[in-house]
Image 1: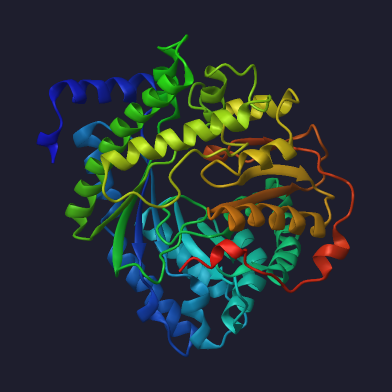
Image 2: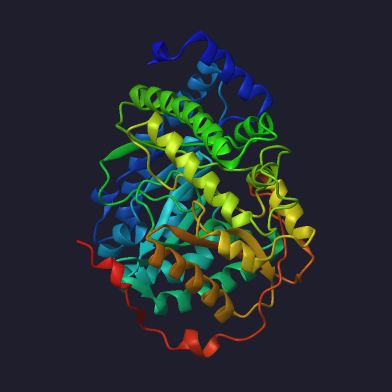
Length: 455
């Protein structure tokens, strides 16, 4: 695999790592837990702990060996498992907290940053296991350190489960209350999806789908700083040329990601899954998707033209990445998390980026309304309605959308939630004060759009 890279490409990669914040954002080992399900919850927990330890015991050491060999930082080492609502259901348990604690303990034992998959797929309705998992979310997310959760509430084919969306508004509020001493941190570990992918390596929404093999190694690359540097070398180029520059850069970044992914999967003896070529920003200066949009000529992210610029960026990243790997998957595109992007934070604080504009941008980005904070007294039904709006965008546009929102306890617009680490800090954004309560209370299912009938 190494022979595919010329000496000039190797030197260019070194420069991108040293000067432009290039890294592998995550290597995520997917593990099927379907064979761990039993009629006894304690037995199921024991089987999960043993299997995760056995399958993932070499993940961190191997990733560190690859870092040393290629000189490319691998920021996170993670695990994704089969949606736990499926694994826990045969036990008949009504409280899944022991399952979350088992995952947390196993993740700590093997040294990974996070474990995703405390998840339920309820886009068309609930089973007893789905109810048990969703009701366990506030306790699970407040009492564990590494466990991440997700709930898929809609698909283009099934429509939207408004009963689930209504419930999750309450769940998010309770999770914020239980983690108020951490600024509502538990909510940062919960993603509500429409059209959730089964092979996403990024947290908090990763899970190992039922169509996946026993194990698979998925990699998430990053590189906003690399793209930003490339665009700045063409200060007067037209937008067609800029798209080509982004495509060429995404190709190089994805080739590097594929090299690492195949090397790690080979050493672990598990199949290589996909490369997720999403641009994942950080709060580091110059490692910002917002700054990429501004480098195209916008005074601030959020100005008129921002959605068009983001559409260009997202499309060019996908086109360039798809040429570099035969196995592109996950989310793939450009992330726009507010708290994790220094340029987004600045744009919100200066009033350039508002929640309605952010929602419009999600129609053309990689995911959706991600890592943003709203006032702590925001009613649960408003949070549910935000989720419904975002899920509707995904359903109608046949794309993945998601919401990861923090109703910051005790805070009001203009305050800042310090989440910490890669999660950064989130300026509290005002929300529309008119009530959607009666709409949310109707429940039921929003039918799938006509474009779902395409099989």
